[in-house]
Image (cartoon, rainbow, N blue to C red; front, side):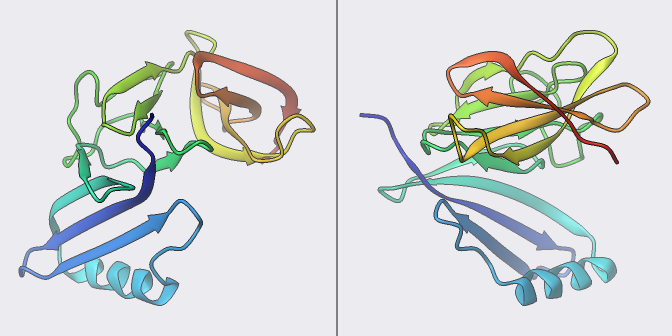
Length: 176
């Protein structure tokens, strides 16, 4: 039986020792907007010295992800989708399997933290720009990504198959 992710937990430590923790559960429950806002305002005056993210499995085990990008739940909760920025942050691990550069700058990780696969965009000159929640007749809760060409905002919507690294074209275009 597959391990299921129940929540994603993020921990920040500031230069004065203050700790802040936030969470996002698979059912959509998360840290309040007010608490998140307080943390963001505090971070304007106090540098973050440590940043950690964890997948919390149904039976309470925490699995650390050494990345600073946001992990997104797969619909079946057996893994997460991560889209990487152009450059890793100081809190990320800047090498395989924890960072992927353009054009194939996204990956799916299993609940145990292992790499399932790296997503494949359309090669040189393109990049995966953002996660996009979309609706299709076949899958009303589809998880997708926006793919763009370098020098332009992400524009084409592709669906993500959690069992295959190849993106699925929707033919939809998003204009910014």
